[in-house]
Amino acid sequence: MADPRPTTVRLQKMSWAFTESAVLFAAVQSGFFTAVSKHGESSQAIAEAMGISHANVQRMIVALLTLELIERNGEGFCNATDVERFLVEGERSYAGRWITWFHHQWANWGELGERLQNTAPEQTLGFYNEGFTEAHARRYHAATASVGLGAARKFLAEVDLSGRRKLLDLGGGSGAYSIEAAKKYPDLEAIVLDLPEVVVVSREFISEHGVADRVSAEKCDFTADPFPKGADVILMNSNLPQYSGEVIQQVVQKAYDALLPGGEMHICGEMINEDWHGPLIPAMCAIHGVLFNSTALPHRPSECIGYFETAGFRDVKVREFIPDILQHISGRKPS
Ligand SMILES: C[S@@+](CC[C@H](N)C(=O)[O-])C[C@H]1O[C@@H](n2cnc3c(N)ncnc32)[C@H](O)[C@@H]1O
Image (cartoon, rainbow, N blue to C red; front, side):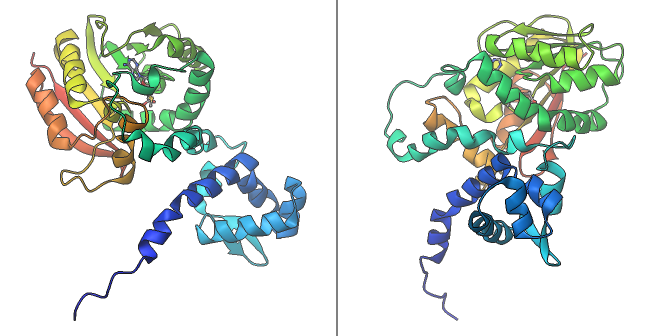
């Protein structure tokens, strides 16, 4: 049978896709999911708990049911299981700050079409160059830490760092990976290297977690500054798509040169599939290059293997780390 004639339905739905993000952001920011969790017995009870009109609650309920973020529960409503776990305020697993983080880029994405015409020279640091203040870094890492500490524990369950003594955490941000590594390995020292506005915030997290005796934070632009010597582990997590292959190659080479013989490097980063078809988040991350006039480009696993092998690493492997978001590449410097 011949293919059915195409219609505009798929395109129309995609043109409305921004409304899904808007509804999700609004629900988190207004505490809607918290109200559903605690007062989901009726739409009226949710309206009273939130102090908003019943009509607005009904509008949100229809949207949230449609997005499968809430479900019917008898006469009332309950959150979907992931929403209940991560988007109810006051819970240890609350990740609302991260899930709403990209709301601040809303206006930039609205100008994507115009920005495609940009011919100004690309800036290596992209959005880290301008307007990246200490206050912004504090909000940013309150958000990244809400998912980063869990990711770090997952990483450490998969990677054995027994016997390692000194870890460098390039673009370590909240220090999540260094903090969890120091907690797990009492003989390990770690240095978080990040931009000046961030290290102030990294130090606050490090102190809060009680590991300041072995974890420090130092200013370093990893694209330009030298790395401290003597490390036997180097990490660079969640930074890959913000830079071109050329920049990443230079950073991986610098890391290789700084590592002790026998040392290891790990990058957990957003990689696209070999055929360029997704996944969604890594594909969209590379659009940051247009929005923020940076060198950001997508990277495929085979390209990442190339950066490591060109630098001199052996036993280079790529595996899935966070499905559809982060791949993990590792390599070892020969002894
Ligand atoms: C998405 S966060 C990831 C933080 C941490 N690695 C994690 O996975 O939880 C990226 C961090 O890299 C830092 N960063 C980006 N480019 C950098 C550069 N050129 N030099 C140093 N730090 C950089 C940012 O300031 C930010 O703290």
